[in-house]
Length: 466
Image (cartoon, rainbow, N blue to C red; front, side, top):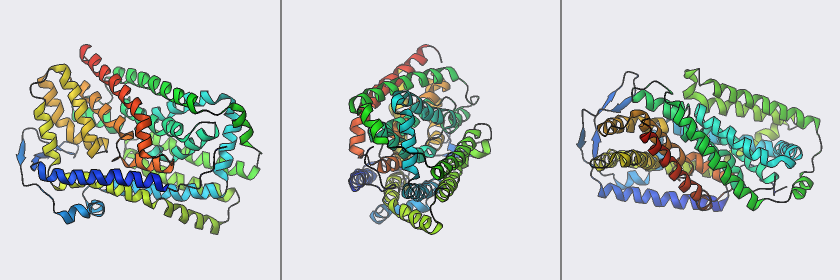
């Protein structure tokens, strides 16, 4: 078995690398406030009460810039900004993860669970390599789960190590797969659903091209993961002999309880497809169910309440560095909005599309969504910003709104697992002890090939009259 991880401690090397990258981006963003003039689009409320850009109102230059003190304090000020509820929820979610995983590690339940998996599936590990990414892709594509997958990432990483692979394989099987599914967006309510509503299309219409995209992207991801796994795998004999599995009734009870409660939480998240009122609370549902599952399982496994309280607090403290990374990453969007240059960047991009051929325009829309996702990781928030602009622009060129939705979903999803401004990526890499630079080098080749594949899908959709 691979060396045992202690809870969810963020490694110093991963933390320093991520902080350095984000700090450089913060400085670059502040410099942009001196170079780009301020401006803003007129905004109105749609029939559903959402604030969207009013294309009839146009773009108006305004005074830009940001005081130095405000930029310096932006990681703190972002907590008080409008719409910060999701940010606070992510931070609370992370603290729960840290406490629960540390408790599960200290009571040895995590190790026991992983030993059971290795004992049972060690000889069929490549079947797991195919099934696990498919599960995560389906979660991302069918119900829009991304942040909600974070509790499972360290489990899959540890499982991958136990099966003779490495941490990169584990993150690829879980988070990378979830991001790919999120982008394919077969029935993703947070990207495709919102974007189609804003474009005046029936929700989840035009399913066939997104379904074809899902299949092709899954095939590419599986080939990428298998190639890497074959390169780093340890012999099956070493995997089997390293498991050392012995059945423990108390651990079995704790494990059944943990799986049952967490499974109920996942079912609640899945039910958000039909119970739309749950969609805004899926992260809260997962956090509460994960907390209940972890605490109950630890107690059933033999841990005393006092020890559980201490280990939970230690685990919470261990992930505080990730909170700093999240605040710094979110301060980039805050700086752009406070300096009134976010709309200016978007306006410049729309103006640049003026004289382009039709096939270039759809790829340009893809590029705009990719670019804006660097500053605005939220898929639904980005839809409210982009769709009222790109749909009218595309219609001038004879491009369907349906194809614009696919381009937007592609641009939003894949870069979630590449950009350092996405808090879920930072959390997952830190918990898996994977350096951000190493992740970029490893996943960069996949991202490039996937960019070519998805661009080809968009051009095919254009040629087929989608």
